[in-house]
Figure 1 (cartoon, rainbow, N blue to C red):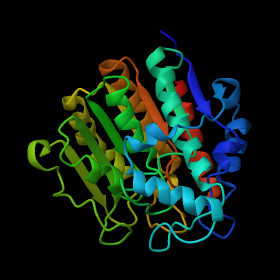
Figure 2 (figure 1 turned 90 degrees about the vertical axis):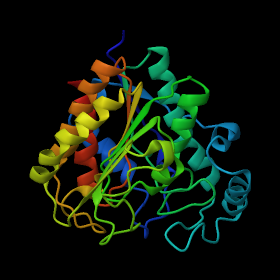
Figure 3 (figure 1 turned 30 degrees about the vertical axis):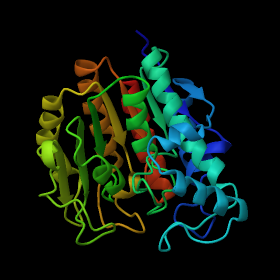
Figure 4 (figure 1 turned 30 degrees about the horizontal axis):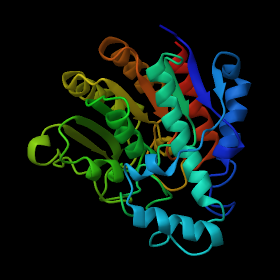
Length: 314
């Protein structure tokens, strides 16, 4: 079995951005690549070119009407996809397909045995709902990935772990009643931050009650608090016995992010990646894909995502 770590990088991924005046700006990919190369991590991984998803793969999660709306606004590059966070930009449809397609290709590489683990920096767009955009997210590559694991690879039991400062509401509510989706989300308390969801009592619905763990963190939460709470989450994931693990490694939970109030360091991201890799090796043949998620301080995201890759390589 391969031990190779694959990282997706290229201008097609960098093209997913909302312009220089938007928090999700054009320099995020370049900031990661600069730190990635400075640490020499690029010499230790397989660099993969971005891949564009076909519409059928996106339709596995998103409604046809919503995809049509994205296509229309992508052609003009004008208008809003939601109440204001997610403006249209020209070429948005193609850029969003490169995000989703790179994640799907990463899963294919893992399932085929070519890669042990994968990191996709511009990905983890966890707010988009099945029929709408939200919070800088056009297509929800996390949800698309879960659907692909089920439909293409016949994997039922998936663990989705999210350490972005914002609650992964687009994933949570899409699979809230799915007992085979183990969901663990550490995020800044929704009473203090968008999207206002992810309360401690949100543990799933129907037959899925008890398969979801939301951990709202107080503003100012640091590495010490995160690592104190993590063991319970790890035990929760292990009990679910997943066949595949998805990590959304949002860097907006680091101290100094301009739109959140969390105070992690990159050590938290390295720690959780290391722990999830050990779980993946023990439970599911090492199958783990990590997605960059949010992060709006360039230095923070560069350090956090480099820590994720470094942990995958240990």
